[in-house]
Image 1 (cartoon, helix red, strand yellow):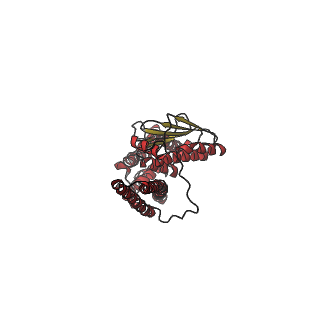
Image 2 (cartoon, helix red, strand yellow; image 1 turned 60 degrees about the horizontal axis):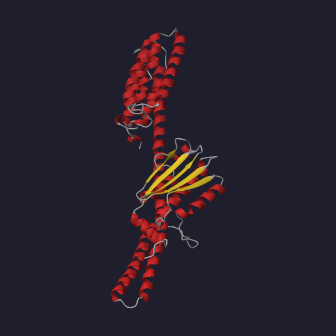
Image 3 (tube, rainbow, N blue to C red; image 1 turned 90 degrees about the vertical axis):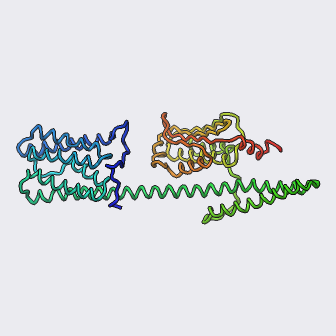
Length: 402
C-alpha cells in the first residue's frame, strides 16, 4: 500500500480550497507559522555566529511561500522550497539545521506522493542541505549525518500517517457499506410485513367473493385466477425476501403493524418525554399515504429526533409535515449546537443518515441534511407521490369503496 500512494501533483487531494484558489486558510496559516519559525531561528543562529544579514532574513521569511501549493502540487512545492532554502544557507553560514519549512515540505511529499518520488526527494533534500550548509566544502560527520537522519524521520512520519489515514478511510467505507446492507435488510423485513399483509387481504377478499357469487362463470374464473395469483405472489415474495433475511434472528413475538405518518404524534410525545421539547406542524390537507411511504416518513422523523437528542444538547425541535398534490415534504430541525457532530462524519454522514438516504432513494425522492444557517441541524426530505398511489392508499384505508 505504501508504494501506491496518490500523487497529488497530478490532481490529487484538493480538499480545503475555496474561492477558486489552490490553497486554503489552513495552508496560509501553515506558511506563516513555518516561515516565521525559520526567520526567528535564522536570527538567533546568525546572531550567535556573528550577525544576520537582510538578504538571509528575507530568504528565510519567504522560503515558505511554496507551501501554499502543498495540497495540490506537492512536487512543485518542494521544487520551490529547496532553491530558496539553499540560497538562504549560502547567504549566511548559519550552521547545521533542518528548518520548519523544509520539515513541512518533506512531510507533505511523503504524505501525498508515491514512494519512489518520496525517496528521490528525500535523497535530493539531504544532499542539497549538506552541500549548501557546508558551502560546498568538505562537511564534518555531524553535517553528513544530521540532514539524512532528519529527512528519514520526517519521511517516516509522513508514510506512517498516510498509511493510517488510508486504513481509517477503508474502515469508514466498510462501516458505511455494512450500514447500508443492514438498513436494506431492515427495509426488506418491513416491506415484507406491509406487502404481505395486503396481498393476504387481497387473497381473502377474492376467495370470499368467489364463494358468494351466484354463478357467473366468467367472473368466477377471474376471481379464481386472482386468488391463485395472490397466493403465488405471496409465496414467491416470501422466498425472495427470505434470502435477504438470511442470518436474521427469528422474531420473538408477532410483529406489530408498521407505523406511518399518522403515528408522528407519538414520536413527538416520546421526544418530549425524553427531554427534547418537540413541536409537530402539519401543512396542507392530510390524506392517506401508501404504507411504505408512510413508514419512510415515520423513520426519517424518528432518526432525526434521535440524532437531535444525542447531539444537539439543550435544544428544541420542530417537525413539519407538508402534504401537496404530488409530493410529501417532511422537515425536522433543532436549534441546538450539535449540528457539526451530527453531520460531521464525512460525505456519507452517520449510519442513521445513510439509512435515511436509502429509504428516500427507494421512493425516488431527495434528502438534504446539514447545519441550518440560523443554527442547529436540519433534515429535509421530499417524497414524490403519484395520483395512482394516492387513490390506492385511500382504498386501502377504507376511504373509497369499490
